[in-house]
Image 1 (cartoon, rainbow over the protein chains, first blue to last red):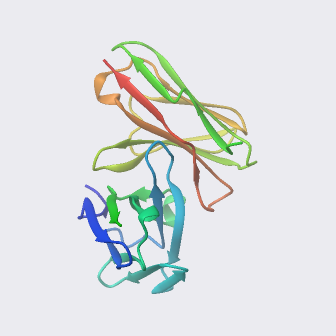
Image 2: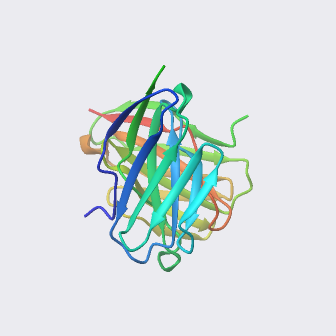
Length: 113
Length: 111
């Protein structure tokens, strides 16, 4: 049973518009959430994170929102750029589980020029 | 130079063969991890090591073993490879519970 789910396997967006990626989790012990970005033939790279004590974290064009009551987080990219085309993974961890990361299945984003 | 390197980058092997994937890091991190990626399932943790003398099983350790030869080296072995171990394998490192840094991956095909 997947504890972290990304229900949209792919997303297509026009350059300059907003990309919204969603992630749901089931384990209420998760206390830290991360987004990773992955280009083909490369390993995932860290993008942005949020602690469970916050509901929003912003870094440039990237903002992550956390809704603990709904066990839902989202990543907003605005404005989207062609270089943002990649696979995005949501991940979660809990201190109680030794800070191991649990990943979602990924969402492939295509930004069209 | 890459901070986390994996060798080989690609490998094709036959069922029943023993194979070793190697990971090296120059980041000086204490923790190292092995993941596999299958389409639609994201990354699943195979094994992780908090230091040279601390090895732990992850979610999907069956059929795999690991060795932490030094702080900078963490190898993954498939004692007798089977086709459903065909996947993309990633090594990662972290300093304590901090951000994990991933290697470029090894694409393994078991025929």
